[in-house]
Amino acid sequence: MKSTMFERVLVVLEEGVSGERGVTWVRELTRGAGHVVHLLVVQPRATSISVAGRAVAFTDQLEDGARASGLAYLERVAARLCEDGLTVTTQVRIGSPANTIRAAAQNIAADLVVVSCPAARGRRRLFDTSLASRILGTLPVPICLYNS
Image 1 (cartoon, one colour):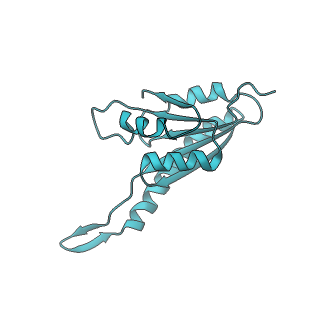
Image 2: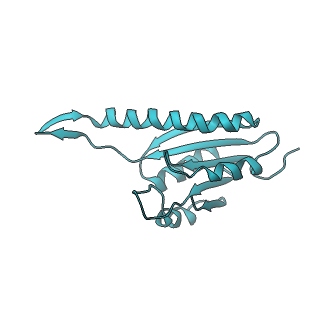
Image 3: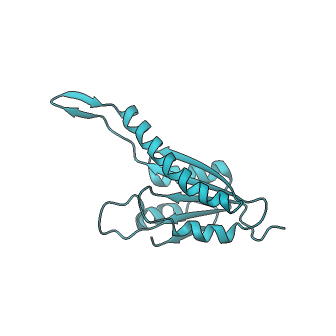
């Protein structure tokens, strides 16, 4: 018997940020058979790096590196959830956060989207309250925002 109405939960994480508190909540929300947790990292589009007019890193190389790093991070988080018996998928997407989250939620038919909203001070964060406001009114499912 399923414990909640959230069968497909999209959890948006930012690599290297203490935004994994939402994963603890997701564990509680998805106890029982039939639940799937989809972990997502959104990386910004890369631009090539040039030194003295010569390209030293191309966009595809930078994005491939970001994907690999993001997947390694997500696999560590996924392993902990799998230990709890949950079914977990991982994905790294490149693009604007609001559009990418919206598309991912629609693609998996998410019942809930969990997004961290770290404080604006300190190093630049991918997610802030402006991101939350851009996705809040555009998704037909509940969004769980938490301060990381």
